[in-house]
Length: 113
Image (tube, rainbow, N blue to C red):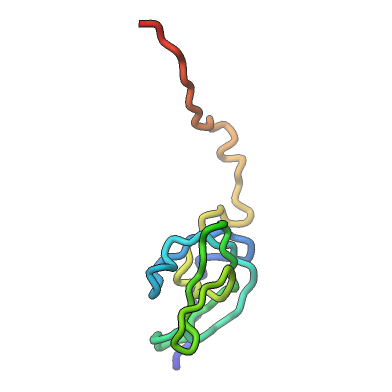
């Protein structure tokens, strides 16, 4: 079995969205990366994949896993890095770059016609 150490998509503390999932029900979940698990075997993949312990960050989301042939839902569990995409800025990202940007605001005015 080969071991490739890829550039990681996430780090501990990030919010991420689940992508490229083998289980369609897991697609699009928003999760928080809690800790690193390390290199782990995942199903039919021929190589070890770097994995994280994640926790669903929404009230209605669930992660679906298969254990001993049975589906099991959980609010937290392992996820391979290649199935996650960070949705929070990387640590050390300079938020001051956007300090002069205006927030989008909706204004509703009554018009007399």
